[in-house]
Image (cartoon, rainbow, N blue to C red; front, side, top):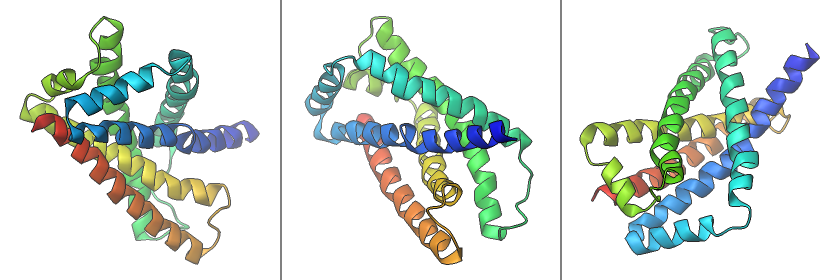
Length: 201
C-alpha cells in the first residue's frame, strides 16, 4: 500500500519535474524555427554544446520518462472508469488523461526514433531533417495529434499534481487550477503548433 502511494507520488512529481520542464524547454527551442533554419540550428548547436548533455538527457529525461510511461500505462489499465468524488467534467478529464497518455507514449517513441536515434546513427538533427520528416500530410497530422496530446497530458496533469500534493485543496482552488491548466494548454499548444508548421511552410 505504501509502495503504491510512493510510486504514484513519484509518477506525479516526475510528470512535472523534470519531464514537464523539459517539454516546455523543448517546445520553446523548436519555436525558434519560426526564425528560419539558421536560428533553429544555432539553438540545436547551443543545446548540444552543453557539458555532459548526454548524461543529463539520460538521467533527467530518458529515465524519468521511462518510469512515468511504464507506471502510467499500469495506472491507465488499473484505474476505475469513474471517479465518484468528482463531477462529470473531471471524470472526462480523468479519461482523457489516460487516453492522451497512451497517445503521447507512442508519439514520443516515434519522435525519438526519427530524431535522437537517427542523430546517433550519424544523421544530425537540423532544420532539413525536420522538414523531411514532415513532408506529407499523414505525418503532419500525426505530429499535430501527438503535440496536442502531449500538451494536454501535461497541462491536465498539473491539476492532478496540484491536488495530490495538497497545493489545490477545496473546490475553489481546484477550479482555479482548472483555469491555470487550460491557459497552459492553450499557450503550449500555440508554441508547439507554430514550431511544427515552421518546418512545413
